[in-house]
Length: 143
Image 1 (cartoon, rainbow, N blue to C red):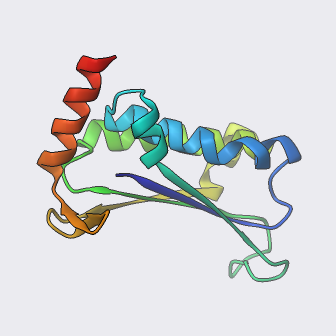
Image 2: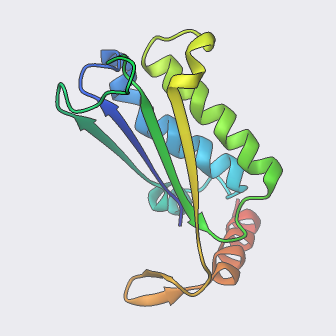
């Protein structure tokens, strides 16, 4: 199942953005994965917010806040088109959460990590991509 983690300097998100960004990123990830919109799949899309203490994030140039979105999905879950769509939407979500203009998009980096088949485990068992596809198809039929 997908996971998404936003790393941001403390205080870089607005109060409203901090409240909504995790669910917004998880929802975007599920949409781009093509997962059915069911309680089961929403519960499996884990979202983390890691806020860095003041002074622990910088560049060689300045201390302007930067944002890192890391996405972990089973290998094969995202086509190139879906990856591009996810990167674009995740960037927009973070910009909105930080009250930044689209021109600031270079401050948001998105890394997509594809977990090789057979190396993902949940509930004490190895989960294969084919298992997830079958669950998604079943979930779509149940909707």
